[in-house]
Image (cartoon, rainbow, N blue to C red):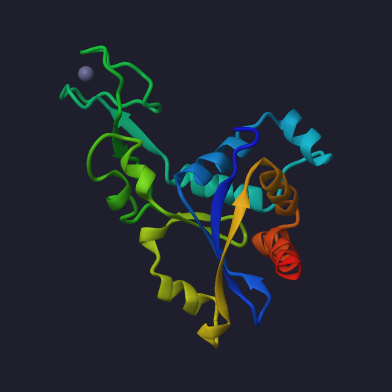
Length: 200
Ligand SMILES: [Zn+2]
């Protein structure tokens, strides 16, 4: 994990000099969850700050909202597990079948993430949208036109889709920027995009 880099797609509004949002695969979503699961002591060392506040809380909340539970794919008992590695008490196989976990705010999220097949694999083809304030949502629940409307983009020609590397270094920058809770993606990625432009 330490030196692995993922690709992050960023629609950039060149006119407004703003990263609108980021499109990310399951790996990045998992990676963000991994960052959030780091012991507080580690995070504190990473950031040289005493507390995690602001947008990190938003991201954590979206992850909690999309959580699923798992059941056995072979037995018809009604046991559910929080973790797909837990073994079914009836047949001793891992409980890998994903079941959506609904809360009052869930609406119909989850039709594309959990409708068919074994857990994990299906989720792998889902694209997530990471908003500039680090709120994370499955792409299927938001149409791209609705997104663009939301950002009030006046001229679509000023939009450009950039692809940047995302690894531990960028993750730490993201954690750090999240303490300020404003335009996190823009502040982390726009300067590196600009400097790439100058050097190329
Ligand atoms: Zn079973």
